Amino acid sequence: MRRNTTSDSTWASSLSAAITIGVAAIAFYAYKQHPGMRIIVASTTTLVALASMLVGGLAGFIFGIPKTIVPSAAEQRAGVTYEGNTNLEQISDWLTKILVGAGLVELGRIGDFFGGLSSRLAGRLGNMGDVVGPAVVILYTVIGFLLAYLWARIYLARELRDAARDDAPDSPLGQMNAALYQPPPGGFERAIEMGENLLKLGMPTQPRFWMYLAAAHGQRVEYLQQTHGPDGEMKESHDQALNAVKKAIALDPAVIDELRAMWRPKPGSKDDDLVVFSNDPEFIQVLGG
Image (tube, rainbow, N blue to C red):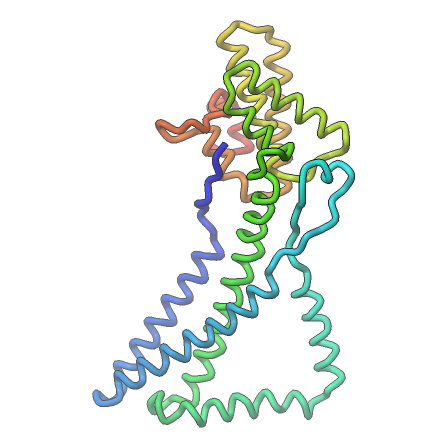
């Protein structure tokens, strides 16, 4: 049940493509300048782009930092949990009200800012510096903001959540995870028992709880198959594992990569808790063929 930190993120690919296109445009623009100005234009434009991305990234990181939420009665036994920061929506609302209240006079200062920026950069950004400078600032500020904000909201929140729960050996989820590495049948039986105790307190909202529960039932089905156990018990654990997989994905779609890694593991992987369902039609429907 190790974490799989690699994921194919569409948003990351899109932003990477935007950065690449921007760099190519800067290089082409610099090449079209007078030979004596090419290095100056390229270096200045690149520095402006990097500075803009840094400013945007800092703002995006601040807005995206996850916040702690008060756990429910059931979750108080399972540790701290995190959710995406909503400050971005709050600040957007505040800024909208401020801009409307300030009126057109205050809005005109935005044009003055870009006008001053254009005049300061024009001399070092070639014959179209008054257009290229603001364009680079806007493009890379937005890219930097989105990169940092999405990273903080998606990955930092998950890492903080996991560090607070799974890595603590004395936490319930930490004990469930440890039990999955113990020899069967004692290991998966202990994990299932701990899971059932947590369910009695309420409906856990941590995706990793449902992942561990699915893994425990997957181990149970494999053990029952090897020992020719009752078909009814295998069917029960099959349904429990499938239900847990669905709940984990519903709470955090990003965990599907980890579930797939357990379902159809790479050769030599020890995290093969769901491999017994690798050809199961219902699991194929949920996890993909």
